[in-house]
Image 1 (cartoon, rainbow over the protein chains, first blue to last red):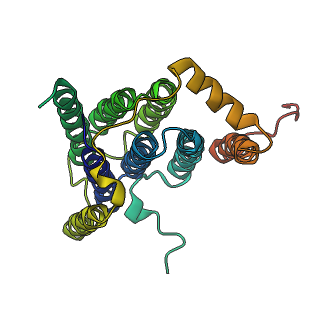
Image 2 (image 1 turned 180 degrees about the vertical axis):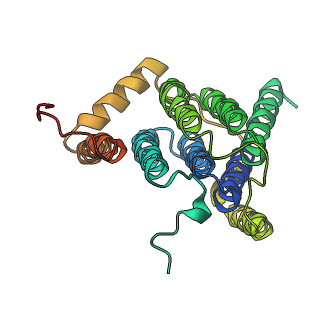
Length: 102
Length: 180
């Protein structure tokens, strides 16, 4: 059988790749893609722990479903913000969106 | 090496390859397509973990909705970000360092888990349909998870209305106003 540690290592790697994408990319849409990768890693961890540690309690899957809902709303609002910024300022580069920077 | 382990390693390799190409590829449309590969790999891992409903939800919501939404956003904002030119900011090495440090920190934390030695899953007590039924009941049961479920639905509604309001063209006439 597959050890639990394999799932955890894969989820950690996925999370850190997403984190690198969030911190290093300049395009705001690419930053959102990194956030999606991180949320997926979290979900993978939740489901793996549910299956290996508490398979009789359904709460692990419920938690994953709630994370899905949050991810969907986050993507919708984030992309709406990016489209709105693009309309007003004609840029999607995160460095150039500096109206609130001091 | 059992067959299940080989299948896991293949899916994990595809998932990680897709994820790496998402964060390094220059062309954002290609990055979005690699994101779909990575999300599909996670869906396959849900199948391996016997969470069939979550695998279907992953395909429907992530691949069917979020990835397509991202591709739309890339195409709507394409002109400003040419495929040439640097795609990372000048602190990319610090970002890579932070990601590596967090990865090693996570591995160190995992090493102390008591459950880490679990290599054998107990077979699920109920079959798959009963599991989905239990999940559905748990989400609407007053004594279990109805409050988080309702909060999530209100959050989805708020996000829906909010994104419509935010993404509206700035000077479009309000609804109901007759055009002259």
